[in-house]
Length: 391
Image 1 (tube, rainbow, N blue to C red):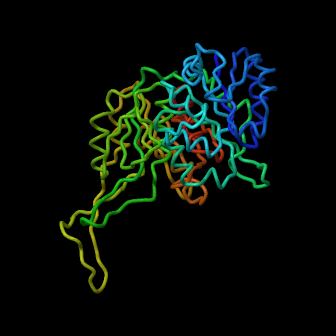
Image 2: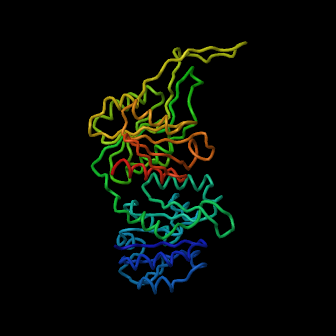
Image 3: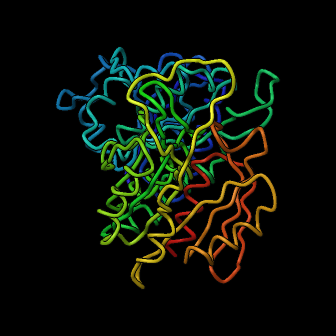
């Protein structure tokens, strides 16, 4: 396979020498692009020696008059790996800046799904909202990311941002299961619902929809046709995912009921409201002396409806967000709602669940088998969930 390795100017650049060596040993034809900043950390010689190909460093250094480097390299490459990817180069990719060979050739890539970006930087930089927004933008466009590891960083800090292992990078880039779900149809629900009391107030919850979105993106990445029913607007949603926008629980119920029948997998990761006001006021309810009493009624149980009306070939997955007796409640929910799997997570823990980038879950099937997934990113958990339910 033809692999183009782009090395940008971070302290982890030296680790890309080992990556290029490993790629060559596995039989890949590797060409390397070094940015000017990368050359402050590594030289061309080790890459040239290992790959037996010349190293590209400048847009304007055309050694072959028949070659337009930034065009021909992208056409040649079956896979493009950017490792390490600094905050600077990620931001340039996201904004379409083309001020050197690496960024120019990225604009010439016709199918960005063959690009794998490997961030490596200080934890604070990685978690900076601007960088996360740029990563989300690239994810939505179809770029792939290899998540950095947690650990001791070059600056002495400890946290997420460490250059991942070569095994992790290669495992992601050359995953055999990349399109294993092509031809399958999936419906995923994500995020909160809102039950309005009046035009200005509503009942809702802190869900951000990140877990459901990660699951939808994982299914899409692996070739499935995906419908995402959600109230959330999020730039990280893959652009090829069909989005049905909803507000209330009843909106979500109607969207699910009208679309789940021909789906192979239904994953209900949304955090829906269990109750809705009996009376919805058309004008703002003014503050009064004393207490306010309101009457609520049960909303439609979407998951139970799907479980009761699914066909024998459909896989239905629910989520159980609990604060206590996690496994017991999850098992009870599987039986009551006729599910194939349930994903249970403890929302009482501050560093996981609602609003967090990470989660920690148990995947339980209808035969009471339990798979425990320790704390990791929601993207990694999404991959594990899809692996389990699609095997």
